[in-house]
Length: 146
Length: 146
DNA sequence: TACTTCGTGACAGATGTAGTTGCAATGGTT
DNA sequence: AACCATTGCAACTACATCTGTCACGAAGTA
Image 1 (cartoon, rainbow over the protein chains, first blue to last red):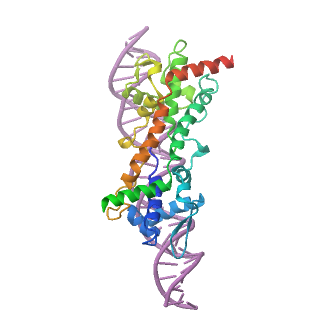
Image 2: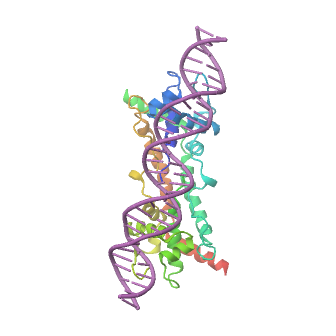
């Protein structure tokens, strides 16, 4: 199972907001053109980011404001906003293993801590990257292009 | 997106194979009863594990043999056998971002290494656990029960 | 041959993803 | 007030994946 493209689209959105903030009004139409998708898809993702408290979306005029500094929004924050996991668990179990089987009734206990540590390894790596890294990374790439 | 239950089911299967190897013939029917699912589901997973070279499945009599020692099969090996990722990438991008947009044409370059490091953090944690950890863990849990 | 078990194709139902259309609501501008 | 660009959202489609189920042929043992 791959993680949905909405996560990387969200990072794309944040990068655009920062890159074009002085040149264009960054609307869902503008973002949809950069990402090559439909404006409604963008608005749905913006709604998720807004519900997570990461941005404010301005109606009427259009535009997006961050609620915190770039360096204070990590990839993990974006991931959490975009990919709501049931009970917060990355790994799924089969429902109701057989309690009469010694393995069946202990499989959760056996696996839970190990799976948790795998999930946490991924999440703590996500916390190392911030939107500020996207800003500086994009500035470098654009400088090379010029 | 949660990772499908097939992964934890596969770990359940391996645990059963080891736990019951001296008491029962471990068939897809037996496993389906412990996991509480359909034997065909089990056989499909066994086929994946077999194709990955982790086990041999015995027809006619029934039963499962590992091709390597328990300590030489990691969670990552099982994960790879069960969850084939397109191009090996955990994270998906939106297809064909706009090459006329400076962000659109650089977004891959900007994100690739960061996403890769996140994926690798997860995978290298998966490599730390082996089926032998499942064996010893289950033995401890069963000893506590008694 | 008879029996057990695996292998596999076909299908169904539920869920999730991505895309599209239409329209009401919002908030500037004139 | 009228106009306009934009967001918010519901409804729908198309498609893929996951899980489960049935049916039946293939493999191997007794």
